[in-house]
Image (cartoon, rainbow, N blue to C red; front, side, top):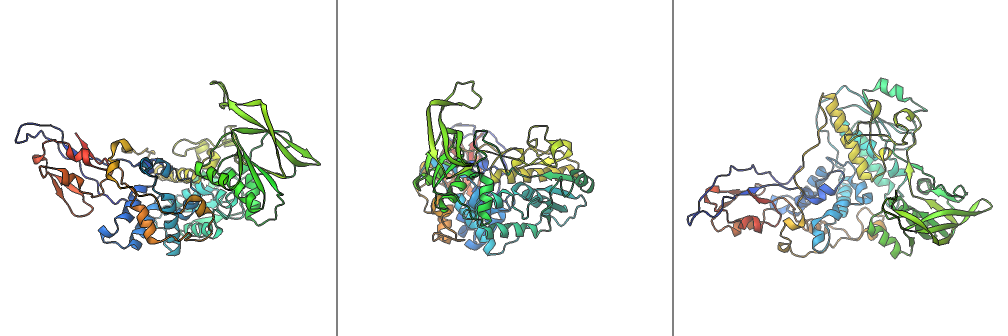
Length: 544
């Protein structure tokens, strides 16, 4: 989906101006990739969705119609916008060219609003074809990767069965992310809408126990493995088996199940990634004072800043060297600060023996690493402990794989891997090889006219305010606030009908066309003065 119509490259001919030949260069409309889309692991067309909303009135659309079109654009690649609008670390914002002015467009918040809008309006996911294929596909794991793969296959007409070893679908979304960040009614609604496309789901069915991999391979034409990585990796330090030491996923699962957890007054969270942040937030809600210790930050910097503002002590870079116990319970965590290691060091850090310190602890949560459960798949991991897969999701023994069981990543990355594997499966069934699309070059701030855009700081609520709210439309969100935020998008690398080229052209080369068709160039009038390309705010016009 896209708001803009690509302009066919014109035939270039040398033209002489009336006062003599000035230049043989001529303007050509060349769409560029916006950094937001290239920064998104799932390649979501952020720019087109924002401009769709920003220019709704110019296209004779109500804002509700524009929101629905934008929602339909998102779910082409992401069937869970209300989920990712809450849990994605939004690298699109980090890549946004508007950071070169007063700050990124808050697409994370806009995506959350569009996801909630889709649920409130009961918008339905659509199949891409009425064709019904005969090839059956088994998807192992109902986490982000598995459900994404199943979605892309079923909408192409394939019968899909999802096998999930746990009681309910969602994987890490359900068992590793707390309800205060991802409300269960939102999770259930988005998954139910996906299953309503006709996906068969079998929960409490573990491969290797309730059904064998060999049986799946006999009964289905292909198998995708997206089992995730929900097992805690050991710290490998003395004392880690104490009764009040828990892996982060197990701790968050117990939290989500409403189990009473005796955490005490002082919690230590080992790790500084997204799961560690969730463990910190849950621990504070249980009344504990929290210290985070980790070798490095892997969570979004804004989330780290937010927990610091809430009083969390953060010790980075540092690492636990022992958990000191008494009567089988952890009493404190001995840590060592890390200093830069030699250039040939494996991890870039080494312990400083002169900078050890202790943290009192009534509960310790380990959120440093996770690993996949290999039961039932021991023969396909090549002894690495992970499922090897190439860029198209092709694994060993003719299987496909994606998500955290191939290597830890974000929810959005897992969804992208599931989607790509589904596209590979579809092409295999059609006798085609997978193809890597050729993307246009990314347009950077240096290629744009940033001074053309007025300063417009975001007025949407901060990440901390959003996460502290449990409402579907919190913090006084409004249609106008979302539209105003969408208007901050600079349409990087694509025409937005600003008509600057038409205004700056002294030879009247540019012909204005109906809205959405942009402009046409009368090359016979052009003398190559370059004013149009120099003035174009978005970097859409090249000279060749």
